[in-house]
Amino acid sequence: MVATSPTAFPTETYNSPDTSGLRYVITSDRPLSERSPNQELLPISARVNEADHLEVGGCDVVELVQRFGSPLYILDEQGLRSACRHYREALAQHYPGEALAVFASKAWSCQAVAAIVASEGLGTDVVSGCELQTSLIAGVSPDRIVFHGNNKSRVELEQAIAAGVTVIVDNWLELETLASLTVDLPEPLPVMVRFTPGIECHTHEYIQTGHIDSKFGFDPDRMGAVFEFLSKTPSLTCTGLHAHIGSQIFETQPHVDLPQVMVGWLKLAREYGLPVNTLNVGGGLGIRYTEHDDPPSIDAWVKTVATSMQAACQAAGLDELPRLMCEPGRSLIGSSCITAYTVGSQKDIPGMRHYITVDGGMSDNPRPITYQSVYRAAIANKMSAPATETVTIAGKHCESGDVVIKDAQIASTQPGDILIVMATGAYNYSMASNYNRIARPAAILVSDGEANVIIARETNEDLMRFDRLPTRLQA
Ligand SMILES: Cc1ncc(COP(=O)(O)O)c(C=O)c1O
Image (cartoon, rainbow, N blue to C red; front, side, top):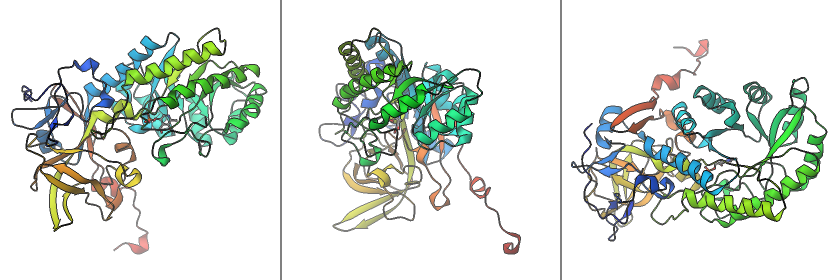
């Protein structure tokens, strides 16, 4: 694919509607290495080519749809790698102790993504046996994998022990099961323990996890009992403590408060003789889904956490800084992917609403119907056409709530146009379903003008594979 020079858009603002709000301005003079991907609406490699088409990773999005079909997840490798580097470099710069970022793979678990983050020196956080298997196959080092979950099965715990990854213990049943599974191990099993920190933040109720009324982690008032249990269980060694306060967070104050709370926990754990030396602050940094979202950069977020951790350790009189771990998901991958759809039918309800329908919807992006999430869209085959239309972009599923974007501002469209939705890298593919027996889309990785399939498009036969027709019902 031939890379063409970008259209001469204003350079100071980018990835946002221009001053008249009529089109997206996507170029910038700032070097890519300085652009924090989570603050962009489009992947950092996005530009408009001479055909007035959107290009990502040096690939023309319209050609990608012709080649791979739609809907299509298009993941920008440069953007994902850049976000990994931002985390790694910010931790090295702002935290003088040992530090590790692990990708919360629930945001998008597949082998290619896990291999990329591992090659950038990050680990992964996994939440199921299959997420664990995915990371291991992709080459993530077991000592950089942490295993989460509020209801891990016995089989999953055995799998984690066999793989040598660190289990983050969530509740009493798990603690007791682990104690029994490890009795005969030659060495104690290193574990971390998750507590709810009681810190609230302003995000959607479903993605808040740090407040006390949460299904995740031990209550802080059970801390003494948990530490006591661990101190009397020689087959388990508690090396770390964990907390995660929520997702899509823009405020920094919760992440100033969290290290202070956690250093107090660490001191208490040590009073019980536990060798706790890792504090894992979870993930949570938000991304830009619309021009109104203004998340801190990755660097600013890491600096906030690292500075607060050092201050808290100093105030607590600790001789050495603990190992600092964080688990970003959304801010690592969310902004580096777009979903491309083909526009189909339209419906006009005079004086009320104009619907345009795309060939996907809630099955490939369940976030709008689940969290009322808001996205931005553009027409990839006419990027500079003024966005004069206010339309509701509906999905093709048999559900009135299957709306991708309500009241979107886009250019006038015809059937066959390629509509892209921005910032769909996090919790889209990983939460996708087969509702209405619609096969899940393919995902491709784009980089330097090359496109590779990383997840094949499902077929109807794939969906049918698990059906069984009892003999008496067979035709
Ligand atoms: C325990 C844990 N860690 C990390 C994350 C990643 O959060 P985010 O994608 O907001 O960075 C989550 C997401 O819910 C989580 O539950």
